[in-house]
Image 1 (cartoon, rainbow, N blue to C red):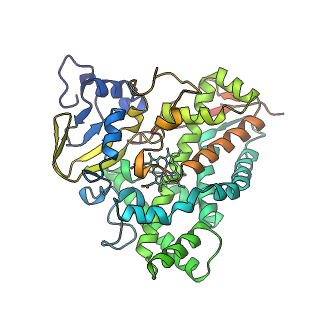
Image 2: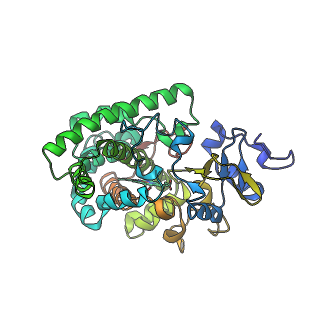
Amino acid sequence: MTQGASSTSRLAEFEYPSAEVIECPFPFYEALRAESPVHRLPNGDILISRWADIVHVVRHPEIFSSVVGPYNEHVLGGPRVGGDDDGPWQLSFSDDPDHKRNRTLNYFLATAEQLRRFEPRIRAIADGLIDGFLEQGEVEFRSAFAAPLPRRVMMDILGLPPADEARFARWFSGQGPRGARLAAPEDQAKEANNRLELADYMRKLIVERVDQPGTDYLSQLARAQVARDGTLDLPYLVTECVGLFGAAVATTAHFIANALLVLLQYPDELARIRHDQAPLRPLLDEVLRFESPVQWSGRVAAIDTELHGVPIPAGSNIQLMWGSANRDETRFEDADRLWVGRPGLAKYHVGFGYGMHRCLGAPLARQEAEISLQQILARLPNIRLAEGAEITHIQAMNQRAPRTLPIRFDVV
Ligand code: HEM
């Protein structure tokens, strides 16, 4: 039972975190919003579940800081991966003024011009993956497409050698820094080790790119950082690039898998999109709301504070439950229904977060998902869930996606 729930409450029926709630968290979120919108777990973590409260929190970074690392050692899998305990945190774990300076430095990640350059490369990566299973008539979509596509895209953008892909797959097989704190100790240790190995790899590569710059993002970022600061800040660049990869890969893989699963579960939408691809963007936005790949992000109370009368001591870990805010009926009419073309959706859904830390890679993630679905629908006729496929979800605390997605299609 969660703390603060009386025996007559619906909330009392749920254990969090637990395998059952992670499999389908939405009834739990509903009970939270109704009964305990600022909810303290037995370990002291505070869950914030209503849309309006989450917006309030992100608008007050002086009270609810993003610099969560110093308060829980497992957030980054150990000390700052860049190797300098006094260096800055990566973007998503920083507050202003560091955050503003570094967000400006990274702004060119997903500009319209970059997206135009990436477009044919993403399409080629998507087609190459489809070629690998086109003749089979069936495939496990997550491992054959959704997971490798964003990994290859990010490796391409950063200019990393394709031969290193297997190593990247291993480094990113875990829960990511935000969810890791609640994971089992052996998983935390594995996560920490993966991050340090990745950091070593990035460090070597950045040094190479500084010596021999290319046109890739890594070279551009290093050049921009030196132009801004006068000297190379290797710990910062390593930390940022490791973080960037972590932010970009699993999230987009989940998004692509969730989008295809939703289409397969809603045949009317699938038929509509096959006939006319105009609703693809609105569908993808609705998927980000309905099945948010990132279910929550962390903050930490910088000072003693309170919300709705609930005391929040300084140092408390706070979970901003994006997945719950996106189902908040006071913000979204008929929130538990998939509604493609939902009015006001793009403005209000928080699938990419909200405010100053809103996802910097959002346009790229959308582009990857859009191209993926375009190519999948164009090239795999009569696509459907494999008979008897039982969909269960990954057991990551803060992420949502099907564990596997077995599909069938006609071979022509
Ligand atoms: C569907 C895929 C994605 C989802 C659902 C997603 C979700 C999010 C969310 C919820 C945040 C806000 C975190 C917070 O407020 O604490 C965020 C931030 C961020 N995301 Fe994404 N993301 C995705 C893809 C990407 C991609 C592809 C990239 C990079 C290429 C990326 C880079 C970032 C960065 C750098 C931040 C930190 C921004 C800042 O702190 O100013 N994300 N993302």
